[in-house]
Structures are given as structure tokens and as C-alpha cells.
Image (spheres, rainbow, N blue to C red):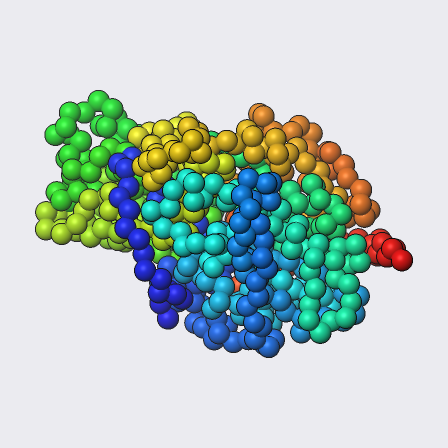
Length: 556
């Protein structure tokens, strides 16, 4: 099975030097991992092939709610927001769970993937709602899928997209929850009478925590997995997390050689003449790729880590394990590189040659840029500025350029894995290219400070909330367990379940999942003891918290 939908892609040229491609490809990889899909859309495990379509609960219809385009008064129009409801396991008085799908892409359209999200017996969310005899809701974010008032394309302007904001998206859920009902269930299901629990990972995990903090009367509890609560413009530190994971998983020698190659690239791009730069690029891409600009050539390194946050070193499109085993093994002697890597003893030329002998590397670069570089001069297309954007990509970049930021540029320093030429400024230039007419709406830089003031960033302490992070996930520095200098101090993550409706600014209920990465506890196909323990801990806490819920007295 290939990708799960066949929506036509939209052509849009990338400005040389942008790191937008990594943001988009990484997002798609994470969404596929959530559903157990490989890079080509097929299941990662053959035994799970039937799970994409097998539905253990009855098929549920698509439903819509009419919502304001702008909840805050600047536009009087409305749109229809899509959602699905599973009541198969509901018993009177049960809680209501809402699964925030986040920024879903066309390849994992919920029309087709209801099974692994909401209906299959092995879906974490489905297990949760059945265990608590609850109602389960799958919620689509405004602007994505079919939840908007007009098609989104590369022709969409800032004026078309101006109301797709964090504030409006949060309010969508509030309005939905506070008037929710189900045909055939003759009970009041609004949050004054039933406890509502938000379930989400990554950006959806952020919304879980933020909404619980801002509207505790609407959300009674939340499970926030891998939530990067604090928004920053430049998040080059992302790749520090990749470094730490590679070292922890036994590839420290490989990271040293990657870094040596990256610093060699930096030196050539910064001090070499045009001939030297062209020779370097041709070494990796072939003569047909020698003309690519420095910024995009630097961005090609990002492709190495595309699957890391979703699948660790065993990515489906490119395996860091295989790459590192290749780079760190002498093909003649079969010896493995010492902890400092090969460069110290064999030199940079040997390491460069060994790198490019690994054929899947160029395949990964081609997949990353939608090119056909061949390593020689015969490639029909080895120009890195030919990318295809889907509607959801345009929308995701709009959110990135206007509010959320988090540009993943070169992490210059002791853990550097990306050449310096991949900069935040390149991404800002990309924002201007995609939306050339600012119309007084597109900011010069993402308004991350303003967003943090609205949400509270990492300075929030919502009660009845469970935070989880992978020990080696790249987003950890923006979450509750952050060790950044500007993060809250004296914060400890504890597995001790707090009393219901209590909070502590120094003790955060949650778990740092040993040896795990991004959102592993909410990815159904992952069933190792660490994630099973985290899931059980949330259920134990929720049982305790639910005993404190008291419906409000109805007015006569």
C-alpha cells in the first residue's frame, strides 16, 4: 500500500538555503510513525498490515461543527470543523476523551486512518476510552484536512490564513466541548457534567497542557506527550538531542566522524574558492549537483536525521544504524572505529570516501529534495530548489513563520551535526518567499514571545496533567524537563501521583522515558516495558483524579 491518499501536490520553489524542508519532511515522518507506517506508506511490521483497515469497533461517521473563523471578532464568517466520535464502549456517566490529531498531513488522512487512531483494539487511545467506559473523539485542527472554509494552496495569502492561529485553535476546542452532545445518548455531556480528558503528543500535547491550564473548567485532565511548551525562533539545540541519543545508543565514534566531516564542509564553504566548493559538493552529489547553493547543500545533512525523532536509529527511510555501522567499519580489516572516530587516524579524505560509498545516503538526499542526483554528471535533476508542497505543508509553514518558530538550524558547538550554512535567517527568507505579500499580517519574525505570553510557555503548572518525554528526544529542551539556562529552575519530574486538582511548581507529574524518543508512549505499535509503564501510570492517576470530579448542579 502506498500513501493513503492521492491528493495532488502543489509546486513551489524553495529559496536556496532554507531549512523548511526538514520541518515538513520531519513532520510527515512523525505522523507516519504514529500510525506504524514506513516512508512509502506501508506498515513497518508485516504483521500489522491488516491493522490499517481492520476496525474492531463499528465504523463511525464523519461529523462537523460550525465554528467562527475568528473567535475574537475580526471576521464574522464560519467554517466546518471535522471530527469523529466512538461511543462503542460508553456507559452512562463515563468520561469523554478528545484525541487532538495535531497538524495532520494528507498522507495520513483521518478518513482512512480511523482504525489505528480510534477504532482498532491495539490503538492506545481506543484502549483508554474503553477501559474507562468513555466516549472517544478524534478532532481535526482548523485548516487541515477538510476543516476550513476554502481550499489552501501555494496561492493562499496571509489574508487567507490570518485566522489560523494558536489562539483560535484552542478556542475551537473550547466551543466544541462546551456544546457537545451525541445523538442517542440522552445525557448532558458538557464539562460541567462530565470530565473531559485531552490526549495528544508533540504540538497536540502542547495544546493539551495549555488548554488544561487556561480552561480548567473545560478540561478536567490531560495527557501531554513530548510537549515542547516554550516557543523560540531558533531551535538549533534540536540536533544536540540527536547527538546525545546517538552517543547513548553506542554510536559515539560515528558522531565524531560526522562532526569532523561537517567541520571540514564548514571550512571549505567559509574559506574555499568556488572551484573548491564545487569539488566538495560534487564529491557528495556528483558533478550535476555541484551548482547547488551553500545553504541548501548544508541542509542536505538534515536528511540524515529525518526519521530520528520518530524511529530513533532504525528509521524506515534511512537507517542511522546502518549508516554509522558502515562509516565506523574499515571494509578491509573489519575493524571498528575507536571512540574518537576514524578521522584522527585515517584522515578526512578516507572518511569522506567511506561516507559517499554508502549508497542509501544519496537516496535519502534525493528523497529529501525530490531530486535524482546520481553521484555523476548524468543526473536529470540534481537541483535542490525543486520541492513540492502539499496544502498542509503551506499551512504548517504559515504557523511556523507567524507564531511557533522553532527553526532547526546548525547546532554550532561541541555537538555540531549540521554545517553552519544552514541558518535561521535562511528560514526567515523562506517565509518571505512563500508569502511574498505581507499584507500587513506576516511578521518579520515568528511572534514566539507573544505566543509564550499567551500560553504561559514552560511556566505553566496545570493540575491533573501527565507529562512524558523521551530521554533522548530532540524536543526535550523546550519541555518541562528542560535544562536550558532560561528554563524554570528547581523543577523535578516525579512519578508520584499528585492529589486531584493540586499543583506544585517544583514537582511535575510525569515520566522521562528511559532510552525512548519522541511521543513513544502514545504510538500504539511501541509496546516496550518503559512505555507500557507510562501508560499504566496515567491510567492509575486518572482513576484517582476522576473520583474527585463533581458535576455542577443544574440550574432549575
